[in-house]
Image 1 (cartoon, protein in one colour):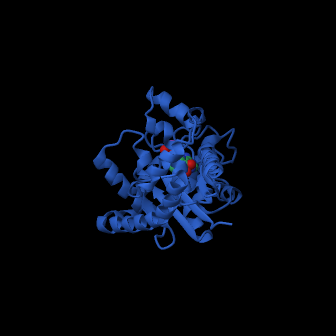
Image 2 (cartoon, protein in one colour; image 1 turned 180 degrees about the vertical axis):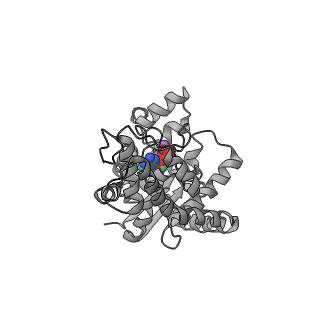
Image 3 (cartoon, protein in one colour; image 1 turned 90 degrees about the horizontal axis):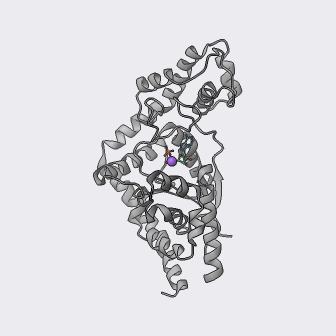
Length: 327
Ligand code: ADP
Ligand code: NA
């Protein structure tokens, strides 16, 4: 049996939002206690599948690094690094791409959706699930925390591990998904959609750097319905139920306990309670992001150290891959 190893990546989209935190980053932090080998990558190679301004991209990478550290990613317990500094990602992607059929990628839902939005997608957008597979296999990762929307991409990584192993001899473990158990955080302005950084609606998304005033303001404007009582019914009352599950998630309470706290309050008063809980949870993170973001040198050195560690894991795997392939 091989070493248990966690790998996950996040695009350098700037400061994460509350959905990213509760749906992904919070569990990234606790996985550091459960696994002895953990890698988290800021996947800048993936981010250029969409147009990026170079100067903004550079800043977004540092925003993400500061955010991950502020959330509790600990460089002493996990390897935090920038994907592009380990060129083996791109090299393994090429080799795995040569083992991937065009139809296998064409049917993946994200390609269908994103290429339709663009009319014409780039080759990079088309093959980015292969790059994801390379990201994971390069470290022989065994466990990959993913959202539901990424399950089919992880299946491609599993297939490619199997295909490579069959052709060139056993090398890669088949990575397993660690699915987030957290309910999706919904947009505050339209609870039929998930909270997202790209939501065009104002006040729909809470970012980790939002001030207490921002948070109070946004939650006050959150869409509810015409019933004033607070109940939990995600199908029938998605707006107020989103606030209840948010409240439970940020305070570590069960939905039942939250409903007890909300007893007798109308949704207006209840919103103040939710704001308070969100502010209490995010305030230390926001202050830590600010502190870290003011020290560029420190962030760069954390990333440099993580990059060196990642490279030292990737290099011997890539040497073996090259040999197996016949180079
Ligand atoms: P966005 O939808 O804002 O573009 P990403 O797709 O970059 O966010 O997601 C990064 C991580 O955060 C993924 O693991 C994804 O599953 C998780 N995530 C994103 N939005 C939410 C949400 N609203 N609720 C829960 N998890 C989310
Ligand atoms: Na997304």
